[in-house]
Image 1 (cartoon, one colour):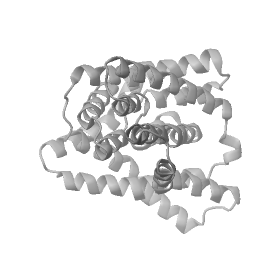
Image 2: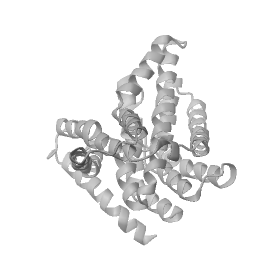
Image 3: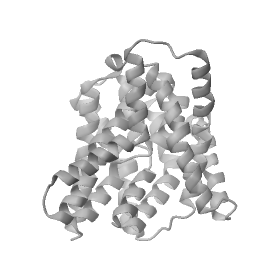
Length: 307
């Protein structure tokens, strides 16, 4: 376990450096925003496209895997929603809290860290987890928030959801990568080098951006943020583990990656949604801050266990 912790420590050290840079204003909020945009639209997109283009969708598409992750995640989503509604918050706040409880930082933290720690076989499962998070649950939170405000489902909501998916560079990169792969055409040498150089900036850039963005977040509503962090770091990976060990016959190496993905802290894009719709952004901010800080230990424990 100590060996795994020491392997994960450099990743969190880069996050800490980013946090220091943001906290001391050496890296301004504007600089953090532009770095995040560079990683999101260019570096991470290049990395994902290159990975997907060298995979076969037919080989990695596993409906049992998708079902296990989806239902385990849905179970915790319902638990977080029920607790929120029991506290008499609005439907849109409950939706944001549930999103915070199950959507991990797979893109910025999971892809660079888990692939290096668990090997290249982790690429396919991570892609499937990312697709479920973005397509199913990323759409659900928008539908719940806009639907509760309008009081009904409308074509406009579906347009908003569809437009969001089409504009998401992670989804676009995955689709384009698998499309390229389907033609069985090798990536030309210069293009492959270009993608490798650009994608190589994703790991340090993403980790630094996570830390710098955390510097601007406040730890308000600690009790709620603590509960949501517990859901994300403990209940979510536990539910996924139960699903793959007792209900869904997922292969061990795939199950290990899925559980590790579920153990990741709350994703920054949940805050973007909360800020955009003005639904409890401080609560989400605190959850991201607490879950990321605590995950230094919990992620190491989970990866050590599944390994």
